[in-house]
Image 1 (cartoon, rainbow, N blue to C red):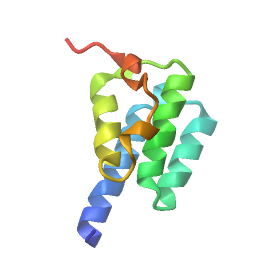
Image 2 (image 1 turned 180 degrees about the horizontal axis):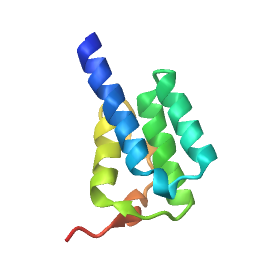
Image 3 (image 1 turned 30 degrees about the vertical axis):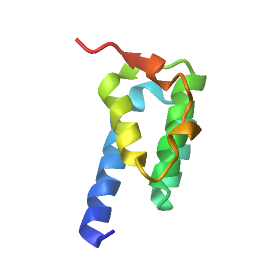
Length: 92
């Protein structure tokens, strides 16, 4: 991945975590941010997905889509929680 693409990817990761800050505990956010800062963006998205499911948290459906998009091709879909879509707030 080129440096420019890597920077854009990192910005998207950080922006998504910031968007979901209201549903994350400080420790959860720190755990996800630490993975991102160590160039483990896909693993951070997998961790975020499990945090949402295990915490029974509700987020916009677009956030679920973005989690999957940011991990696409890098994390096997079967590693995501099978009920991740249940965390999505219905689209209007």
